[in-house]
Amino acid sequence: MKTGNYNRLWRWHFYAALFIAPLLITLTLSGIGYLFYTNVENKAYDHLFFGKNGTTEKLTIDEGIEKVIEQNKGYSIAKVIVLDDPYNTRLTMTNKDGDQKYVFLDDHNEVIGTQNAKYTFSNMMREIHSSLFVGGTVVNYLVELAACWAIFLLFTGLYMTFKGRAFKKRKNPSKRQKSKKWHALVGTIITIPMIIIIFTGLPWSAFMGNFIYSAAQNHPSIGIPTLKQQPPTSDMSEIPWATRKNKAPSSEGSNEHHGGMTMSDKPNQSAMMSIEQLMDKVDEAHIQKPYSIIYPATEEGVYTVSKGSNTGVTGLDVSPYDEMTSYFDQYNGNLISKVGYEDYGILAKWFTWGIPLHEGHLFGWPNKIINLTVCLSFLLVIFWGMKTWLARKRKGEISAPPVASKGVSVSFILFMVILGLLMPLFGLSLIAVAIVEGIIYLTNKEKKERMAS
Image: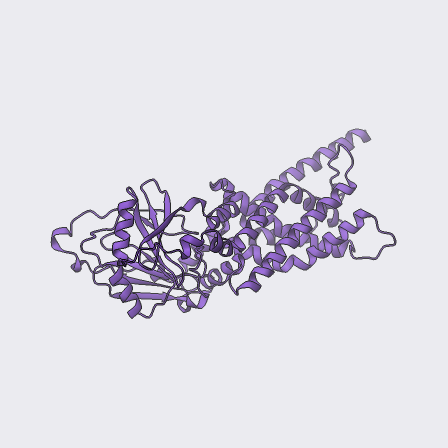
């Protein structure tokens, strides 16, 4: 890039940082919180996760579920989460209003306690991180836009560091120069890992995430296998003739981590295979704990038994290689089909590896420590950036970098176009920024012409 671009990039870098710094701080702190949600929940919910009811009588899983339904009128079971010992079994329940609660059963299938799903530590951290606990399309887009502009800040910061020779040794450097040097040094070190963290989180974003997910669905060879998109159906001949025409209940959305399914009630319960019988079939299929069982939504639906690498449920995550989704007939329990990691396309594999890397549990504690270090360093970069600005800021003025005197170069346009194509929402925001910059440029030009005349 030409020398004339330095002021322009500095100016854009400054305004971008000024406007999105509060969002970036919020996202980084909530991301740090989410890094350790399993550790926090294991301590905070110790009784629910590992406690015992104390009753000596042992119930079957189905008797335990019936007891739970009786105690929670208006709610129905949507999912059974079977975890490795010493974790208790967790039931996900919903009502017609979409409210969700978790109920825990001990090893005797007796009720231990209940949680309001909305206010668990993991769900709260995730809601703050993805939608600032407000939700809505506009807020989701705002969060994604902040992530995109963070990448712009990292790239432009890298350019200015080397173009402006920020590491040049100076005799008796001022406080501002010291802050600028630390801002540049740490920013340079964390650029690549921070970009990796941001890009592995974008698949769950509102705009770009939907685009990636649609591409994965529309092109199974590189994305999500058709079998996972369109589950098979159960054998209708297994349904008793007397109940075959009964209307099946409808399913409603769930916020279980980044997706899921919730049913208002089990279809044809008298004809369905019991959960205990299904678990025996799961064992026969050599599917080991932990796994989740999702109820059928209709008479034709199937039991879905899955293992995921990014479930958002303490104790449920598995290695990406072990991720799989299997489908069992709801009437006879036969394993109909199964799709695993090896069947995924390159995009789906990216989801499977990238998201747990972003969340900090892909390779255990080292992953958490690396992510934590990068996040804390990013906060320091923001701090030193603000400190550098405040050191040169004049009282009563914003003290923004000067407007670039030269025209826009081809290299600058090319740089922006590439970033805009890689991050479409960022590209759209550039149009707005360009319009504002154009208005400022024309206004200043007109003032100069008037003064000259």
